[in-house]
Amino acid sequence: MTINSGERIEITQVLRPAQWREYFDLPADLYRKQPAWVQPLALQNRQAWAPRNPVFRHLEAAAWVACRADRVVGRISAQDDRLQIEQGRPETGQFGQLEAIDDAAVFGALLDAAGAWLRGRGKRLMQGPFDLTINQQCGLLVDGFDVAPAMMMPYHQPFYARQLEALGFRSAVEMLAYRGAVDYPVPATVARLLERTSSRLSFRPLRRAELSANAERMRALFNACWAGNWGFIPFTGEEFAHLVQEMKPLVRPGYVQIAWQGEAPVGFIVALPDLNGLIRDLAGRLWPFGWARLLWRLARHRASMVRVPLMGVTPEHHQTLMGAAIGYGLIESIRSHILADGINRSEQSWILADNRGMRAMVEAIGMRVAARYRIYEREIEA
Image 1 (cartoon, helix red, strand yellow):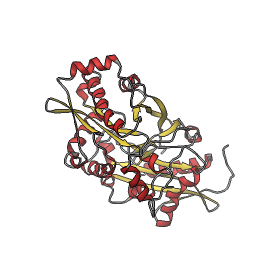
Image 2: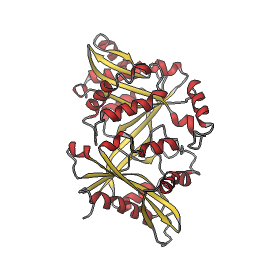
Image 3: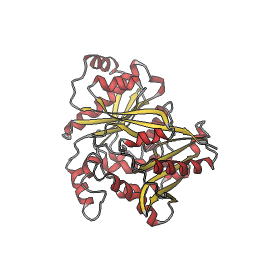
Image 4: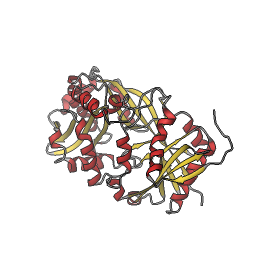
């Protein structure tokens, strides 16, 4: 039920440590009764906003909290990314990290604050939610509320979409999270395709110790493979190196593979044990005993699912049989390693809803849509 008490709403920009604590603590207050929600690690929240985060080399951001009667009832961020200009989107700004009670006035005040900040920077269109860029968490959950989110995937309550749409926001794009068993039977058509292309393709794993040395190659591959996707923002060298350092503790043997056609890299895949399944009982805290629990679970391969957050095929092979062979070959290249760790569930996310080729590929091996996400947009009024 929508709440609208008529009491005054105060919007305050987050600047002081006490305000940041309120900002970070709000989701736990809002979601504690939602059984599917997984509380992110507090350390991850703080690190995302730390000035040393390389994303702030090209992105400016601000954050606000909404208070009513001395109670924090909402929060939001706004981002102005100069890389949007380089991608031909100079008038596009973003909002993100939107959380609030089911109250039209609170949602309106928060989005007005973010819009005014963006308008002051010459933006005329606001899109979101992004946390803080498209290369991190993004999208609003609009279907799949009973499914616990995988790592680096957002979760929201059902009324968020209704509140945004009531404020004039429309869908800009939809993304899907697919889930399925890892021990699927390989379709005969896929087996024949892989056999026909086996002499032209090879798949080579990257060990954990090799990740840093190959970070630039992987970054170049990612940027090439994803350049045509909606809202694409390239990873900078600093950002990707930072991401590799964050991923390293989770990387298992065989979970990172590069596809080669001769001596040319033509695709890649990264699978990670689902961190959310390992931290959901830690209430976001690693101190004093959470570190020990998490490290023990990682060492004992206690994950119940893997997520594939990064996968791509170079543009010249898009919508071709060779591209399909590269994609299926990459999935096959990690499958035996995942099963050897005792894991039989995987999530591929996110996949654009209009990416028919990728959707057909994962559906052919038995994966089904588990959750749907939407990025909204609205013009910023002068």
